[in-house]
Image (tube, rainbow, N blue to C red):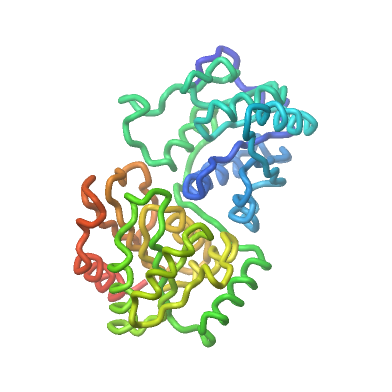
Length: 348
Protein backbone atom coordinates (compact mmCIF):
# COMPACT_ATOMS: atom_id res chain seq x y z
CA UNK A 1 0.00 0.00 0.00
CA UNK A 2 2.44 2.68 1.17
CA UNK A 3 6.10 2.83 2.10
CA UNK A 4 5.25 3.30 5.75
CA UNK A 5 4.57 0.35 8.04
CA UNK A 6 1.56 1.79 9.82
CA UNK A 7 -1.83 1.48 8.08
CA UNK A 8 -4.28 4.34 8.07
CA UNK A 9 -6.67 4.29 11.01
CA UNK A 10 -9.81 5.58 9.33
CA UNK A 11 -11.80 5.33 12.58
CA UNK A 12 -9.65 8.12 14.04
CA UNK A 13 -10.24 10.50 11.14
CA UNK A 14 -13.08 12.95 11.55
CA UNK A 15 -11.69 15.88 9.56
CA UNK A 16 -9.99 15.18 6.22
CA UNK A 17 -8.21 17.74 4.06
CA UNK A 18 -7.82 17.12 0.31
CA UNK A 19 -5.26 19.37 -1.36
CA UNK A 20 -6.56 19.89 -4.88
CA UNK A 21 -4.45 20.18 -8.04
CA UNK A 22 -3.73 23.73 -9.19
CA UNK A 23 -4.69 23.45 -12.87
CA UNK A 24 -8.37 23.58 -13.85
CA UNK A 25 -8.12 20.48 -16.02
CA UNK A 26 -6.29 18.49 -13.35
CA UNK A 27 -8.77 19.52 -10.66
CA UNK A 28 -11.58 18.31 -12.92
CA UNK A 29 -9.77 15.03 -13.54
CA UNK A 30 -9.56 14.56 -9.77
CA UNK A 31 -13.37 14.45 -9.42
CA UNK A 32 -13.60 10.64 -9.92
CA UNK A 33 -11.36 10.19 -6.87
CA UNK A 34 -13.47 12.67 -4.92
CA UNK A 35 -16.58 10.67 -5.84
CA UNK A 36 -14.89 7.51 -4.54
CA UNK A 37 -14.03 9.23 -1.26
CA UNK A 38 -17.64 10.26 -0.85
CA UNK A 39 -18.86 6.73 -1.53
CA UNK A 40 -16.49 4.93 0.87
CA UNK A 41 -18.37 3.76 3.96
CA UNK A 42 -15.40 4.45 6.24
CA UNK A 43 -15.60 8.14 5.38
CA UNK A 44 -19.31 8.51 6.05
CA UNK A 45 -19.63 11.25 8.63
CA UNK A 46 -16.11 12.53 7.94
CA UNK A 47 -15.93 16.26 7.25
CA UNK A 48 -14.07 16.58 3.93
CA UNK A 49 -12.47 19.94 3.13
CA UNK A 50 -10.78 20.95 -0.10
CA UNK A 51 -7.79 23.30 -0.12
CA UNK A 52 -7.41 24.97 -3.49
CA UNK A 53 -6.12 27.99 -5.34
CA UNK A 54 -8.48 30.93 -6.03
CA UNK A 55 -10.97 30.20 -8.81
CA UNK A 56 -11.23 26.48 -8.28
CA UNK A 57 -13.94 27.11 -5.69
CA UNK A 58 -16.12 28.28 -8.60
CA UNK A 59 -15.29 25.09 -10.46
CA UNK A 60 -16.31 22.80 -7.59
CA UNK A 61 -19.26 24.83 -6.29
CA UNK A 62 -22.48 22.87 -6.75
CA UNK A 63 -20.78 19.48 -7.04
CA UNK A 64 -21.45 18.11 -3.51
CA UNK A 65 -17.97 16.58 -3.41
CA UNK A 66 -16.76 18.63 -0.45
CA UNK A 67 -18.24 19.80 2.83
CA UNK A 68 -16.06 22.90 2.84
CA UNK A 69 -13.64 24.74 0.57
CA UNK A 70 -10.63 26.75 1.73
CA UNK A 71 -9.08 29.02 -0.85
CA UNK A 72 -5.41 29.86 -0.54
CA UNK A 73 -1.98 29.62 -2.05
CA UNK A 74 1.38 29.32 -0.26
CA UNK A 75 3.10 31.99 -2.35
CA UNK A 76 6.43 33.57 -1.44
CA UNK A 77 9.06 32.52 1.07
CA UNK A 78 6.70 32.65 4.03
CA UNK A 79 3.72 31.24 2.13
CA UNK A 80 3.95 27.65 3.44
CA UNK A 81 4.32 28.86 7.02
CA UNK A 82 1.45 31.36 6.77
CA UNK A 83 -0.92 28.92 5.05
CA UNK A 84 0.20 26.06 7.29
CA UNK A 85 -0.62 28.13 10.37
CA UNK A 86 -4.03 28.98 8.94
CA UNK A 87 -4.81 25.33 8.17
CA UNK A 88 -3.52 24.19 11.59
CA UNK A 89 -6.37 26.12 13.21
CA UNK A 90 -8.82 23.73 11.52
CA UNK A 91 -7.36 20.72 13.36
CA UNK A 92 -7.41 18.26 10.47
CA UNK A 93 -6.73 14.61 11.29
CA UNK A 94 -5.44 13.65 7.84
CA UNK A 95 -4.54 15.20 4.51
CA UNK A 96 -4.41 13.72 0.99
CA UNK A 97 -2.03 15.65 -1.24
CA UNK A 98 -2.99 15.36 -4.93
CA UNK A 99 -0.45 17.77 -6.53
CA UNK A 100 3.24 16.90 -6.80
CA UNK A 101 4.24 20.23 -5.27
CA UNK A 102 7.07 20.37 -2.71
CA UNK A 103 5.73 23.70 -1.43
CA UNK A 104 2.28 22.28 -0.75
CA UNK A 105 3.79 19.29 1.03
CA UNK A 106 5.69 21.71 3.26
CA UNK A 107 2.47 23.62 3.91
CA UNK A 108 0.65 20.48 5.03
CA UNK A 109 3.52 19.45 7.30
CA UNK A 110 3.58 22.91 8.88
CA UNK A 111 -0.18 22.56 9.43
CA UNK A 112 0.68 19.82 11.98
CA UNK A 113 -1.65 17.27 10.39
CA UNK A 114 -0.87 13.85 11.83
CA UNK A 115 -1.53 11.74 8.71
CA UNK A 116 -0.11 13.15 5.46
CA UNK A 117 -0.62 11.09 2.29
CA UNK A 118 0.93 11.68 -1.12
CA UNK A 119 3.26 10.41 -3.81
CA UNK A 120 6.90 10.08 -2.77
CA UNK A 121 8.54 12.27 -5.39
CA UNK A 122 10.34 15.56 -5.95
CA UNK A 123 12.38 15.22 -2.70
CA UNK A 124 9.32 15.70 -0.50
CA UNK A 125 8.83 12.18 0.87
CA UNK A 126 10.29 13.06 4.28
CA UNK A 127 7.39 15.47 4.83
CA UNK A 128 4.78 12.72 4.35
CA UNK A 129 3.72 10.03 6.81
CA UNK A 130 2.38 7.79 4.02
CA UNK A 131 4.71 7.96 1.03
CA UNK A 132 3.08 6.35 -2.00
CA UNK A 133 5.21 4.74 -4.74
CA UNK A 134 5.07 5.58 -8.43
CA UNK A 135 1.87 4.12 -9.94
CA UNK A 136 3.55 3.23 -13.26
CA UNK A 137 6.25 0.58 -13.79
CA UNK A 138 8.20 2.89 -16.08
CA UNK A 139 8.68 5.65 -13.52
CA UNK A 140 7.36 9.17 -13.12
CA UNK A 141 7.88 10.07 -16.78
CA UNK A 142 5.77 7.22 -18.11
CA UNK A 143 2.47 8.68 -19.39
CA UNK A 144 -0.57 7.94 -17.26
CA UNK A 145 -3.96 9.65 -17.53
CA UNK A 146 -4.34 12.14 -14.70
CA UNK A 147 -7.66 10.51 -13.78
CA UNK A 148 -5.85 7.23 -13.12
CA UNK A 149 -2.96 9.01 -11.41
CA UNK A 150 -5.31 10.40 -8.78
CA UNK A 151 -7.38 7.22 -8.52
CA UNK A 152 -4.11 5.37 -7.82
CA UNK A 153 -3.70 7.43 -4.64
CA UNK A 154 -7.10 6.20 -3.49
CA UNK A 155 -6.34 2.60 -4.42
CA UNK A 156 -3.06 2.62 -2.49
CA UNK A 157 -4.81 3.74 0.68
CA UNK A 158 -7.71 1.32 0.29
CA UNK A 159 -10.27 3.55 -1.45
CA UNK A 160 -11.87 1.43 -4.16
CA UNK A 161 -12.22 3.04 -7.58
CA UNK A 162 -15.23 2.55 -9.81
CA UNK A 163 -16.52 4.98 -12.38
CA UNK A 164 -13.73 6.96 -14.10
CA UNK A 165 -16.10 9.59 -15.45
CA UNK A 166 -15.59 13.19 -14.41
CA UNK A 167 -18.60 15.12 -13.16
CA UNK A 168 -19.10 18.83 -12.51
CA UNK A 169 -22.43 20.40 -11.67
CA UNK A 170 -23.34 24.06 -11.76
CA UNK A 171 -24.94 25.64 -8.72
CA UNK A 172 -28.33 27.35 -9.17
CA UNK A 173 -26.60 30.75 -9.23
CA UNK A 174 -24.12 29.53 -11.84
CA UNK A 175 -26.92 28.18 -14.03
CA UNK A 176 -28.72 31.51 -13.82
CA UNK A 177 -25.52 33.37 -14.70
CA UNK A 178 -24.97 31.05 -17.66
CA UNK A 179 -28.48 31.62 -18.98
CA UNK A 180 -27.99 35.38 -18.66
CA UNK A 181 -24.81 35.17 -20.75
CA UNK A 182 -26.56 33.09 -23.42
CA UNK A 183 -29.36 35.65 -23.67
CA UNK A 184 -26.87 38.51 -23.92
CA UNK A 185 -25.05 36.59 -26.64
CA UNK A 186 -28.25 36.45 -28.68
CA UNK A 187 -29.40 32.90 -27.95
CA UNK A 188 -32.96 33.44 -26.84
CA UNK A 189 -34.94 30.31 -27.64
CA UNK A 190 -32.74 27.32 -26.94
CA UNK A 191 -31.00 27.26 -30.31
CA UNK A 192 -28.04 25.01 -31.05
CA UNK A 193 -24.59 26.49 -30.55
CA UNK A 194 -20.91 25.62 -30.68
CA UNK A 195 -18.05 26.84 -28.52
CA UNK A 196 -14.55 27.46 -29.85
CA UNK A 197 -11.71 27.70 -27.31
CA UNK A 198 -8.55 29.05 -29.00
CA UNK A 199 -6.50 29.58 -25.84
CA UNK A 200 -4.11 27.33 -23.93
CA UNK A 201 -1.59 27.71 -21.14
CA UNK A 202 1.29 27.84 -23.63
CA UNK A 203 1.45 29.39 -27.10
CA UNK A 204 2.78 26.18 -28.66
CA UNK A 205 -0.43 24.38 -27.65
CA UNK A 206 -2.64 26.80 -29.62
CA UNK A 207 -4.09 26.09 -33.05
CA UNK A 208 -3.78 29.22 -35.26
CA UNK A 209 -6.48 31.85 -34.75
CA UNK A 210 -7.19 32.20 -38.48
CA UNK A 211 -8.17 28.52 -38.59
CA UNK A 212 -10.45 28.90 -35.59
CA UNK A 213 -12.05 31.85 -37.42
CA UNK A 214 -12.50 29.79 -40.60
CA UNK A 215 -13.95 26.95 -38.53
CA UNK A 216 -16.45 29.36 -36.97
CA UNK A 217 -17.64 30.28 -40.46
CA UNK A 218 -17.89 26.59 -41.42
CA UNK A 219 -20.00 25.73 -38.38
CA UNK A 220 -22.26 28.76 -38.84
CA UNK A 221 -22.68 28.39 -42.59
CA UNK A 222 -22.57 24.63 -42.94
CA UNK A 223 -24.50 23.59 -39.84
CA UNK A 224 -26.50 26.67 -38.83
CA UNK A 225 -24.90 26.79 -35.41
CA UNK A 226 -24.54 29.95 -33.37
CA UNK A 227 -20.83 30.15 -32.54
CA UNK A 228 -19.33 31.41 -29.28
CA UNK A 229 -15.62 31.99 -28.72
CA UNK A 230 -14.43 31.40 -25.16
CA UNK A 231 -11.29 32.23 -23.21
CA UNK A 232 -9.94 33.30 -19.86
CA UNK A 233 -9.61 37.00 -19.00
CA UNK A 234 -5.90 36.74 -19.91
CA UNK A 235 -6.91 35.46 -23.37
CA UNK A 236 -9.23 38.36 -24.15
CA UNK A 237 -7.14 39.63 -27.08
CA UNK A 238 -6.82 36.13 -28.53
CA UNK A 239 -10.58 35.61 -28.40
CA UNK A 240 -11.18 39.03 -29.93
CA UNK A 241 -8.80 38.20 -32.79
CA UNK A 242 -10.78 35.08 -33.69
CA UNK A 243 -14.04 37.01 -33.58
CA UNK A 244 -12.64 39.77 -35.79
CA UNK A 245 -11.20 37.37 -38.36
CA UNK A 246 -14.41 35.34 -38.69
CA UNK A 247 -17.00 36.54 -41.20
CA UNK A 248 -19.93 34.95 -39.36
CA UNK A 249 -19.80 37.34 -36.39
CA UNK A 250 -19.35 34.86 -33.53
CA UNK A 251 -20.10 36.02 -29.99
CA UNK A 252 -17.21 36.82 -27.64
CA UNK A 253 -17.92 35.09 -24.32
CA UNK A 254 -14.95 36.76 -22.65
CA UNK A 255 -16.56 40.17 -23.17
CA UNK A 256 -19.70 38.79 -21.51
CA UNK A 257 -17.78 38.09 -18.28
CA UNK A 258 -17.96 34.31 -18.41
CA UNK A 259 -16.58 32.53 -15.33
CA UNK A 260 -15.62 28.95 -14.56
CA UNK A 261 -18.96 28.58 -12.83
CA UNK A 262 -21.13 29.84 -15.69
CA UNK A 263 -18.97 27.94 -18.20
CA UNK A 264 -20.07 24.66 -16.61
CA UNK A 265 -23.70 25.40 -17.45
CA UNK A 266 -23.05 26.86 -20.89
CA UNK A 267 -20.80 23.97 -21.92
CA UNK A 268 -23.36 21.39 -20.83
CA UNK A 269 -25.89 23.00 -23.18
CA UNK A 270 -23.59 23.23 -26.21
CA UNK A 271 -23.84 21.02 -29.27
CA UNK A 272 -20.11 21.11 -30.02
CA UNK A 273 -16.84 22.24 -28.46
CA UNK A 274 -13.59 22.60 -30.38
CA UNK A 275 -10.68 23.24 -28.06
CA UNK A 276 -6.97 23.03 -27.63
CA UNK A 277 -5.57 20.91 -24.79
CA UNK A 278 -6.89 23.07 -21.98
CA UNK A 279 -9.17 23.00 -18.96
CA UNK A 280 -12.27 23.94 -20.95
CA UNK A 281 -12.18 20.46 -22.52
CA UNK A 282 -12.37 18.79 -19.13
CA UNK A 283 -15.01 21.16 -17.78
CA UNK A 284 -17.26 20.57 -20.78
CA UNK A 285 -17.00 16.78 -20.62
CA UNK A 286 -17.53 16.73 -16.85
CA UNK A 287 -20.51 19.08 -17.00
CA UNK A 288 -22.13 17.08 -19.80
CA UNK A 289 -21.59 13.78 -17.95
CA UNK A 290 -23.23 15.19 -14.83
CA UNK A 291 -26.53 15.55 -16.67
CA UNK A 292 -29.11 12.86 -16.11
CA UNK A 293 -29.79 12.58 -19.84
CA UNK A 294 -27.33 11.21 -22.38
CA UNK A 295 -25.01 14.10 -23.31
CA UNK A 296 -25.38 15.59 -26.77
CA UNK A 297 -22.20 17.63 -26.57
CA UNK A 298 -19.51 16.62 -29.02
CA UNK A 299 -15.89 17.55 -28.28
CA UNK A 300 -13.05 17.96 -30.76
CA UNK A 301 -9.72 18.14 -28.89
CA UNK A 302 -6.61 19.41 -30.65
CA UNK A 303 -3.19 18.15 -29.52
CA UNK A 304 0.23 19.23 -30.72
CA UNK A 305 3.46 18.97 -28.72
CA UNK A 306 1.79 17.42 -25.65
CA UNK A 307 1.13 13.68 -25.39
CA UNK A 308 -2.64 13.00 -25.27
CA UNK A 309 -2.01 9.98 -23.02
CA UNK A 310 -1.60 12.28 -20.01
CA UNK A 311 -5.09 13.70 -20.48
CA UNK A 312 -7.24 10.75 -21.60
CA UNK A 313 -10.82 11.02 -20.35
CA UNK A 314 -13.90 8.81 -20.34
CA UNK A 315 -16.09 10.63 -22.87
CA UNK A 316 -17.61 8.74 -25.77
CA UNK A 317 -18.42 11.79 -27.89
CA UNK A 318 -14.88 13.11 -28.06
CA UNK A 319 -12.69 13.03 -31.15
CA UNK A 320 -8.99 13.83 -30.83
CA UNK A 321 -6.89 15.39 -33.57
CA UNK A 322 -3.17 15.15 -32.86
CA UNK A 323 0.00 16.11 -34.70
CA UNK A 324 1.94 13.38 -32.91
CA UNK A 325 4.21 15.89 -31.20
CA UNK A 326 4.59 18.27 -34.14
CA UNK A 327 3.57 21.97 -34.09
CA UNK A 328 -0.13 22.83 -33.97
CA UNK A 329 0.09 24.50 -37.37
CA UNK A 330 0.39 20.99 -38.83
CA UNK A 331 -3.30 20.32 -38.10
CA UNK A 332 -5.14 21.20 -41.34
CA UNK A 333 -8.40 23.12 -41.22
CA UNK A 334 -10.01 20.49 -43.44
CA UNK A 335 -9.22 17.74 -40.91
CA UNK A 336 -10.93 19.59 -38.08
CA UNK A 337 -13.93 20.53 -40.23
CA UNK A 338 -14.34 16.90 -41.25
CA UNK A 339 -14.16 15.74 -37.62
CA UNK A 340 -16.83 18.30 -36.67
CA UNK A 341 -19.06 17.22 -39.57
CA UNK A 342 -18.83 13.54 -38.61
CA UNK A 343 -19.55 14.21 -34.95
CA UNK A 344 -22.46 16.54 -35.63
CA UNK A 345 -24.04 14.02 -37.98
CA UNK A 346 -23.97 11.28 -35.35
CA UNK A 347 -26.90 10.97 -32.93
CA UNK A 348 -26.25 11.98 -29.31
